[in-house]
Image 1 (cartoon, rainbow, N blue to C red):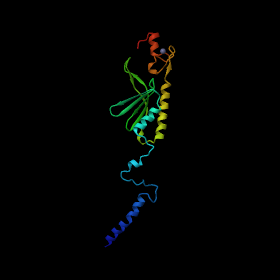
Image 2: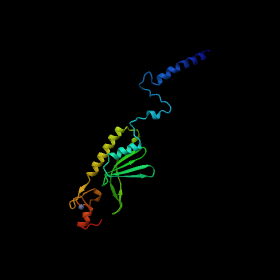
Image 3: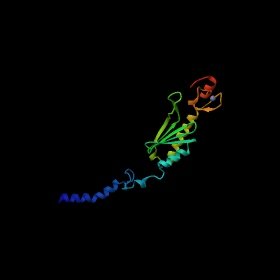
Image 4: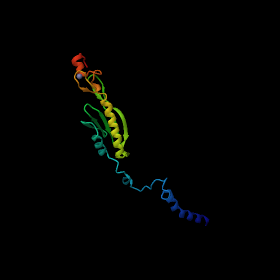
Length: 181
Ligand SMILES: [Zn+2]
């Protein structure tokens, strides 16, 4: 008899306890109740999808833009001529880098970006993503173009990989100084 009464009392009090646990009464600590199949309805409208992010990125890059799709779903964008910035976009991440060349031989330039950072973009609201991308691309462009030099002989503004030394471009070094690259 006593055991039965105890069981009945427990059952009676359970709904109230559940309400407190769900945070409806205190409302401060407990997470909001999760409804089944509600993931989509909780998705903030300020989040972007991959296509929207791509257009957001392309919009703020120096022109012209060269875009390549690699096997595995990675999009690479090289912006500027001469190259200024490199962006790599996957389903989860976006990486921003400064365009750079590595010479694998006297006539073999290989694109070899200096990466500034990688973001997990999926959970970042568009306004924040926009600010971060702007900062990275602005800094990257500034760092890259600050390396350009004006050749004293031909007057061409030249990126560092095509300078012979700090004041003569490779073309002029060949033409006027007899240098063979
Ligand atoms: Zn020159």
